[in-house]
Image 1: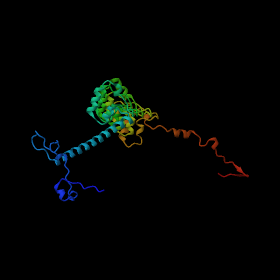
Image 2: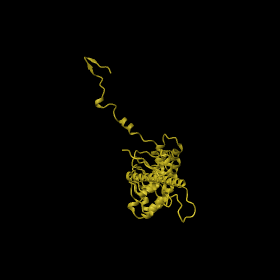
Image 3: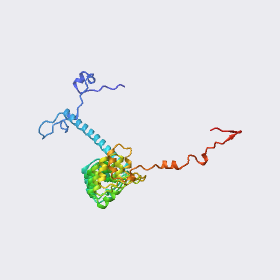
Image 4: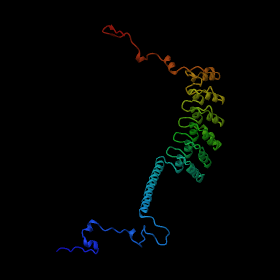
Length: 333
């Protein structure tokens, strides 16, 4: 049984049924429906003309695109920031104050210090490298942050994984501002202990400043009471010995001016003058020769030479015998 064709009430379709396929009827969109509150339809009671549909769509698509791009960018930066934070926190065990100082966020660092003033456990917290916020403030050359940390209660005597106090680091880096801040806002008894303290290499603050050749810091430390004749625990060198080794004539003159003992010898028995032998700078040798005693001017005899003179050439087991005979014939050596 065949189904009867659909009958259209449109006169045009009634005359030509095939035109329904050639020219499909337009689809009515919500914007074309009157009275339905469509976005493109003008609303009663509003002044002016409503924007066109194409303009509205373009504006909406542009706003949506900006929102999506901004959201992706914000999430990206947020994730990177969180990754950096967790990396430093878990790998280096850094506190929030450590991170603020590392990234040189001055305002944030000062606010954290202000709110945690007096909390020595937080202010002296050490990361995996045994560095306190005061160490990091000196390393990043932020004397103002270091000043506020000391006022808030940071301890200047805490050492890092190399045995350096913040003052050791400041002297090694040559930051006179940091050295001045650290010594100015430190208690006198703490300052004397720090000046005498040695790191794990046996160097005091004066040794480090002398090795780097920072004359202004050396003179400033000596004015604070640093021991000019302090010896390294390893070999007994003083700052004057180090100055001779480095051939720094200005440093030699400065140390001698502040009372360095030119007759102080190392654990091997060498005076600063004896270290000038074989060096190129003759002015240092002439300067120290006038102040060094005669017995410390000549190089001491080597222990190897003394031992070689006293020991026989051959031991009893190594004596050469020239009377060996085999088969009645003497062996020829």
